[in-house]
Image (cartoon, rainbow, N blue to C red):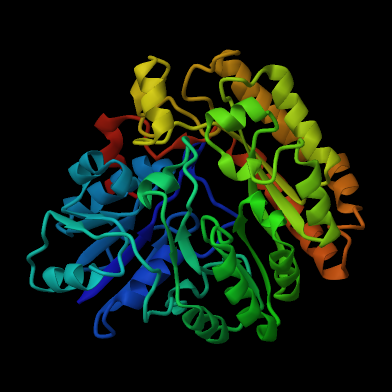
Length: 456
């Protein structure tokens, strides 16, 4: 038996698929491969950088679906089905909006794969796939290591993706993660994390956890186990980590370079309305105290903002970019607030009649990447789109990159940190501008879609 794993692209630039030069390993598919019995052949096609070989014989196509890749995922599934290959779809989007996804596959997988993937494989082996598999969220990868041989030769960045935990205890109203995991944080056996790090050669690790520091005591245990491994690592974390000095010391000792931190907004009214409670732990003083602590420990910051909340204005978007530049963040993401399906934010905007593109922006042929998909309260959709692009442009200007890089407390704390900064900032800048305005999927007209795809 043979299973083909597919990582879909986002969409196209002009008339060809976008090639992601900053692509990282699709960890979720490596996990799926690790869960697959050894007598089953597994191949991976990464649509972000290679042509899918639809002529390569296979018994099952397994496609991971995210909201941004849904349109392209459905195009790919249609080609496999046209050729008689059954398709199973899973991933975040499949769990958030299953009724839509099930229309494009033979089997729908809802939830985490660990507990039920073996059942999918055995059913496919017997030619008796069920219409739906529903698994509960739980501890990541119990007894299973990621299969990394399927990543060989695909030009991924030299960073090993891993996971220690899934989910987050907070309940931000725009966040799909809190919906998927029901505001719960699941922790992997730390000994298995250590085993996985030791099983591969790289010394730079990106933990893809939604909030690796959601549980401070569990994070401390992880950090203590990482110290002897002498790796360097990055993850995503909430800013309340600065309330725990022992945790901060352990982060540094364990090799943490820094974290992606969801600031989301510099306006406390926005933070309250989005229920971003993690940013208020210890009080709110315009982030001065936590940023001072982060700089004290020399951690680099990948700052993430969502722009377009009800208290945002054109001036507040500009102020956010100035804030990021002045604080010399390593990277900055200025994301337009996106109404992901089945989140509290989506429900609110739907009730208020503020959704654009018929509500399903991720499928609409006219929607373009990094464009506003709803009517903001204090500006037009076009104004918000332009303001966010200017924020990206200003933050990623050559002058900004140089001035931020020359920060002795963080980005110049060591030669390694400075080289890391100078290597990835130009790449991040390039990819940010390249994706702006990209359309989703390869085909823009459903009538021509099937014919075009069969000739890929």
